[in-house]
Length: 572
Image (tube, rainbow, N blue to C red):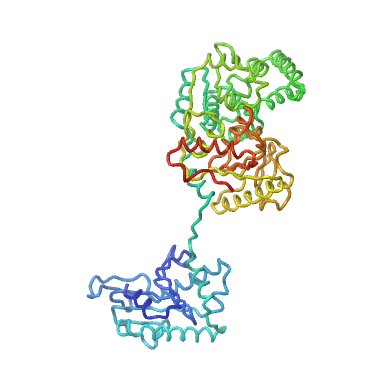
């Protein structure tokens, strides 16, 4: 402390000194420390400070306390310590590709002994008298000692390669190279990182659903978006495969099917599980018996083909599956689909001896023309029901915002706290929409990059495909690549998708576009599905014509959350 105070009070204010600089690039040690690094106008000086009594004899260096007691040998002498620290800094600068900061200026080292007197022999090959300040001259002669030391090392440097004075800007560069600032990062990306730690993998209710499978052949899991139904579906498929069953894990959405398949590929029992969306399963089974499936868009032809294919598979002998797990089941509740599944799974799914798990949220039903509530009720009546009431995927703010806008699933609550409030970005004309969308996407990329989150965690979700401006896909619109989500394609940069195609999936940040109206039940339901794809950050880019509707929604939100007045969704 005495040396620190002396350096602080007895040297000019524009000199820079670093105290207790730890070094990870020492040539002989895992880590080392320089007591002081003094960056003066003419040289960089590494100072080793040794309190107590220090001396050297034929056995090496020794130290003792100020009374001369508690004597002990030193593994390394103080001048060697100072020199080693200096060359560790040289290595560090080389690793930073800043050799100029070493090459162009004089560097040296010295020892300060504030408690003892040490005589340096004139014949010593390592140490010169200029390199030592001991109790005889400390602290009164500190300034003269530093000036003399700087001239000594500058002279030695000049004799080799010349030396320059160190301008104030370069002194700052050296200091920042040796001890850079730890910049504080904040913003949306960092808020996402803080929230991630709260997101649960399996809750008690999810474990209960899985435990029920041990005692019930048929289980229906009911829960809102974000309650963890897909996690339950994956774990149920894994457990069934582990028990030796041939499992079909299916859903309606193609992108969700790819996600399930990728997740299953990491299971040891992956060969026992077929994880595909329903239409892909049909295509594979048809190809296996030499048939070609028609497009599902041709409803009557496709449904007739399903009936015919089921008969063909039965006649071919051997049913391909003996257990089925259906995720996002509300989208597969049609007569034709359920009848086909009933035909290809051992013991079926409509018979009392059948075995299956069904996960669904009726509020996410986006295909009403294919939905048969009678079929769904029949399956529910035949199963043990497990409600998942805790939302564990997205934050409470997203939950409250979505409920206020849609009025859907009001009885459920998110357990994920976050300070990140959904944003509303308003526009009048299409040009303003494109400009504001570009600005927000670029800022999101920067905020996520600052937090170390990849830009693939940003997804632009559109109510309809034509709502996405062509400009967004052009190079340079956003600072990272941008492209439509394609099956089997690993993308870099921002992903673009329709809400329908992204159903069942999630991302750290979701930007919603294309919601020009929220007047019908279908539009409201679509907004609910899109908004609940976001885990931690939600942006809705909306026309100003929706201002009154959203204002009323925010009023409802204010009523449901205590003290929310100062934290309403931001308008941009």
